Length: 329
Image 1 (tube, rainbow, N blue to C red):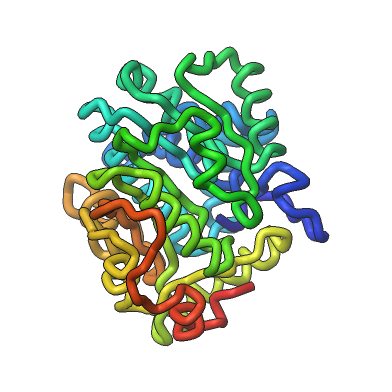
Image 2: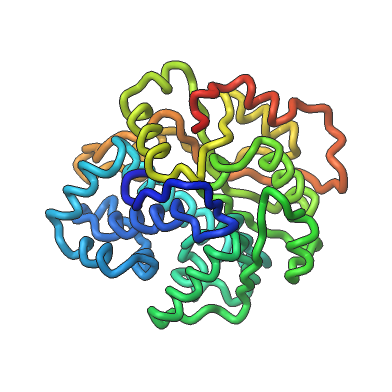
């Protein structure tokens, strides 16, 4: 996300330093948890654990919070984070209430759900996958705040661009014979199309039918890319985190084809209007804002497991070539 981070221009990758987009996401969630409007207030009260002291101090000042959201955040970005967090909270909570055997966070960043939902996780093994520097910072901040880590949680270092998920997860104790929920929140933008394809194939190969994956992606259209909110979002993303450029998007209208050809079917999908209706509406019917029209939230089920994808399908690279390259940094 943009605006609420310090610029880190250079050539350092997330494999070498803790992710700044993960910190920015935690900042936005912490701001949402302090929103004075109860109906849309964020539930992530642990997000501020991951912030520096100066950012935590900002949260206590209503005027400062308003200034940050007005001057450092792109139009609709805060609203998207409120909806996105609520959507994946619901997906995770429902799976845990059903006692899903395994819960995997792909690119976990500073996701606090293993700790916020601790009372629901007793029968679930949890795997947090991310680059080692980000994991080190996260564990240090949790320890500093006195937040205990569940015994059934494993931190699994991975470089998604280089490591094979099919090998990494089983080595960490993941069972290929038990259903799992995978959460892939806020990650697809930053991966090459080839890696997006490989991860979807790996999740399907690792999990029995009935397992599922929740993720979000950008789906730009020519009309969306010309909107002021989207233009401002792109400017801030390029300026604020040049070391984590955007690399992947799907063209509008291609999601169902993209997933079905990879062995998935949509359980739930929220576009900008659905996000607004479900997560951004006050009791009197007033909308607090709009989500940029490029964003989509998805929960999809794996329909079968195969060792090798044999379905004839459009490669992710080809779909990417159909989409607007102006989305890429």
